[in-house]
Image 1 (cartoon, rainbow, N blue to C red):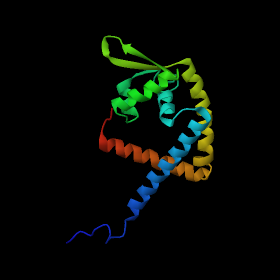
Image 2: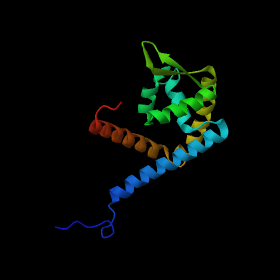
Image 3: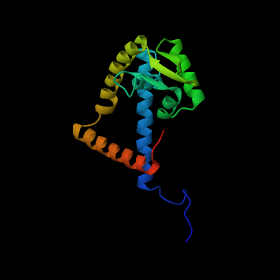
Amino acid sequence: MAMETADEAVVPDVVREFGSLLGAATLLERVANRELERRCGIKHSMFEVLLRLSPTGDACRATMGTLAGQLTFTSGGMTRLIDRMEAQGLVVRTTAEGDRRRQNVAITEAGETKLAEALYVHAETLRRHFAGPLTSEERASLATALRRLRTTAREELGTLP
């Protein structure tokens, strides 16, 4: 039996649905990034780093490698991002005790202030552009479905860094 080419076959619904998911996520991230840049002067990636370093986040201090893995950055990309954040006074880098090759990153007081501002803006943006168009039932169904998808994808991929 010969395989149909993409031009010959009707695109399966599952392909369109996945494309819609990725498209919506990409556009919502662009909206969130635009608002964080315009109103807070930071990129969404900086916001994500600050969240992970905040006292209410995963930890108050993390290695460059850990942050790169969590945010799917290359080591060079993470270094450039942390360089920019350090220049803005949002984070500070220190050499890891016992291993001069490793660098720890910690949030500064200015970073905590910026994070509080950005959290307010981000929540406001998400209420308008993510929660606003959906009913509470749709949001609940979406949240349940996304948790299930994340769980099955993690099971498939195993432990990630």
